Image 1 (cartoon, rainbow, N blue to C red):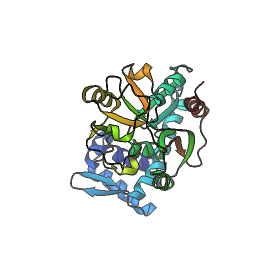
Image 2 (tube, rainbow, N blue to C red):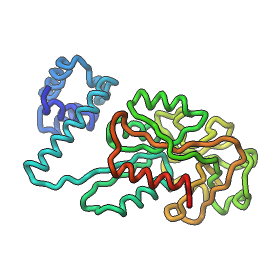
Image 3 (tube, helix red, strand yellow):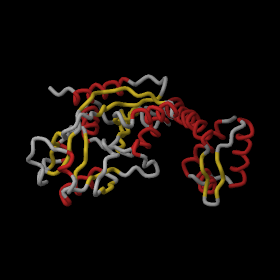
Image 4 (tube, rainbow, N blue to C red):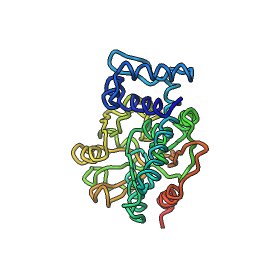
Length: 301
C-alpha cells in the first residue's frame, strides 16, 4: 500500500468518477483503474462499485477512505511544515442542524482568535450529513437533538458510525413563528390551535425518516407541511404564509432579526440538545471552549 494509491482513492471518492479523477490527477483512466485494482487486491476490499455513470463507494470503502483521508492530510501538513516552511493554520469545524444559537456561539468563539492563524468552518445541514461530517473528520463536533422518539434509533446510528453523543442541555418545546402570525400574542399555544397553519420542516434528502427530522413531534398529523432547505427560506415562509416550526425556543435576534418569536407549546415533551464527536478522539482545546459557550444557552444568566 502506497501513499500514491491512497491519494488516488481519495480523489476518486471526491470526484465520484474514475474518468474525472484521472483528468485531475493527470493520469490515464486505465492506469488509474489498474492502480486501484492492485490496492483492492492487496487489502482484500472492494472500494468502489463501478456504475455506467460514475462510481459508488462501498461500505468497506467508506471505512477505508476515512483513514486514507487522514493519511493524505497528514502528508500535506508535513510537507507544508518541513519542506515549504509554511505556518500550518489550526482548523476547527462544526456541523449542525439548523440552530441559529449554534451559529451565534460559533461567532463568539471565532472572535476570540486571530483569524489569520485559524481556519474556521460551520455547516448548517441535514441530520445525516451532521453525522457523516463528524464520522469522516470533516467536522470535529456535530450539534443535534434527541428526544423520547428518536433517541433509540439515533444512538444506534451513532454507534454504527463510530461517534459518541454527549448532552449539553435539556429544554421545552416552543412554536417558532413570525410576530405577525395570528397566534403570536399568546403566552402559550395548544397543539390544536396550529391546525389551520402550515408546519415548516427542513428537508432531509435521502434520509427522510422521521428519526432524522430536525423538528420534534414529527409523527403528529399535520394538514399542511412545507419543506425548506435553509433557515432563510424557513423565515420567509413564516412571514409570507403564517407558517411555523417546532423548536427549542432559543432564538437569536442578532442573526434572524426581530420579526420572529418563540412561544411555549403546551406539552410534556422535552428535547435534549447535545453534541457528537468521533469515538476515542479527544476534543481540541478550541472544541472544549466552543462547547462551554454552547452550554450557556441552556443556562441563561
